[in-house]
Image 1 (cartoon, helix red, strand yellow):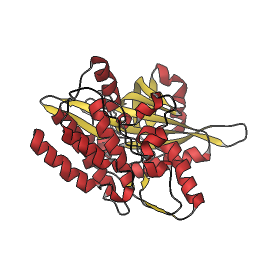
Image 2 (cartoon, one colour):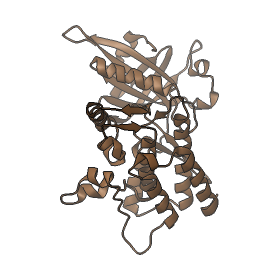
Image 3 (cartoon, one colour):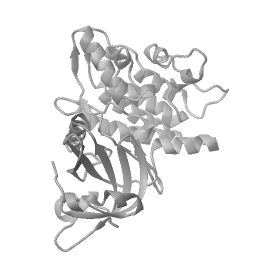
Image 4 (cartoon, helix red, strand yellow):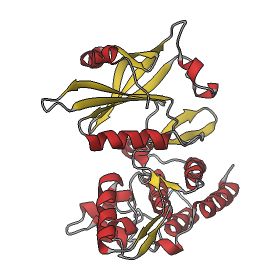
Length: 340
């Protein structure tokens, strides 16, 4: 665990209006807030370099360093031991991965702040990442939907190919890791002139070793409860909604989420979100029964083979669902067919 100069980090009160934060021996000036959710806040920060410190001295891979010293800093307010353990696990898991399509954790610090009345210490965690100001796939989808625009087939396939490459890195560990929350809101997209957008999967707060043996009803219910807290409902695999009392869960939960995400790259939403707007509709039933609803209209902007690709990944029975290597082979064939 990194630890920091807690006295200097007490500048928390000045965070929204600017101020400096130390992450270990490196100092960052807060420029503005980028977002927030739950107990976490994301800020745009600029490194304040001195002769004796600097990220360049700490990070071996210079390609991860920002040319202008601008980064994204996630600040997490920790109010109990359970939250502390979750943040420590996110840091541990994030530090495992090194892949161009997975967002790298550059540095981190967990510091104790003023104690509560009961005498237990509260903590703040600071996680430093490269910044991608073009936003997420979810952000892009919202804008494109209002404009009635679509990604080209080539861009869809290249974005998806990059997500597959990042997940393959996670699934190749021994034991394999599952991301557990693949969705448009966790995919950063960066525009590149003359190339498809760069896609980077982020947020490893739900990532865990993928393979679990479920051997009782209580274990099945425990998994379902965990999934309801950590896996976004419209992208959650059927076996995480209704887990049998005897089941072998593996990294193909991510493949289901990938299929939903491919649909969302094309059409802006999960293939099951229609159920939320129907009278008497059930998102869980739509997912468990793999009731995909395709956009109505005589002409879709994408070839039927992309629809078949989505359907192939959305097999409700995990034992017959393809693995990430199968998906990569297929997406490469589609790229060869529909555009380089």
